[in-house]
Amino acid sequence: MPPVSDHYFTARPASDDERRGVVVHLAGRDVTVEVAPGIFSPGGVDKGTRILLAELPPAPAGDLLDLGCGWGPIALTAALENPATTVWAVDVNERALDLVRRNADRLGVADRVRAMTPDQVPDDVTFAAIWSNPPIRVGKQVLHDMLHRWLPRLASPPPPDGGAWLVVQKNLGADSLARWIETELGLATRRAASSKGFRVLHVTR
Image (cartoon, rainbow, N blue to C red):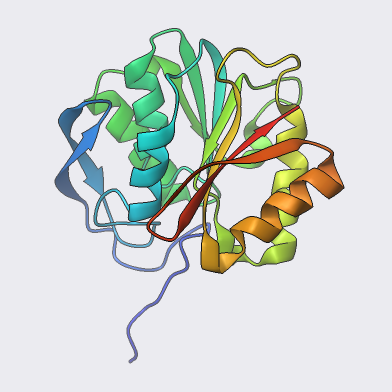
């Protein structure tokens, strides 16, 4: 039988749920988190997320969305940085959401991390900030639909350092995505940083 292969955007991964602890650097400290196969970046913090985390401003108070949270490096960073931040960690992958909850509990921030599927987020919640390494490999149309759903929910006016911060590989369409956000959604988009083949985009209302 061929080996099982999951996309990280699978709702219920078929691969063995083999949990293991890894040490990662989040919010200025080394912490141990739990990871597993069948999710995005099961070995630790991926390069794109590391680049994004290095460029992000401090987490603002209020509601913050981590779109495509995986096991939680972005969500956990925001929760560790600011006890006044409520983090909505959103993913379609149920294994990833379970890992986020377990990792938030392990790090003592479970009271301010809400891990859930997109449809579980109340429609009336707006976000002071969106921090995301979006799932580019779902395909352009699915990605556009996702951003069309969530970016308009940025708070207006945004708090200082608010808005959406997205990291996208240059060769996977970062520049064309920035143009699409401006043209189709009418949101100001600038290149906040460029490093190691990745762009960090800052989107504001």
